[in-house]
Image (cartoon, rainbow, N blue to C red):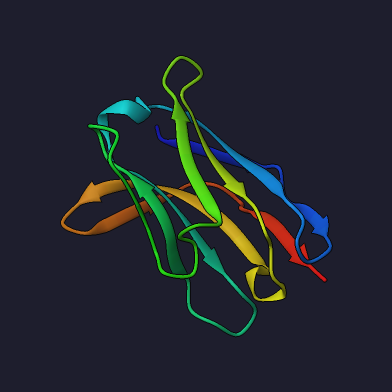
Length: 116
């Protein structure tokens, strides 16, 4: 049974930083592609960053240079470091596990990031 529990969100001023965490259970994060997504009010959910099994990381244009994805294989936890935050980064952030075929499995409630 896959469980993903996001935490670490909050309210910050523009230019600030946050570190999001995603505690995983029911699978091993190092053996799957794991990603962060976000969804702003009134907008579709969008991918932010991902890390694949061999450790290669990918970022969308909006995240590159400001966000850093990482994982702790011992803690079975995924992280997303958010730096130089902008008001447009305001969204609910979710982590997800690749289930194959380009589809992702979401299991958490998300964590809210609000930038003012």
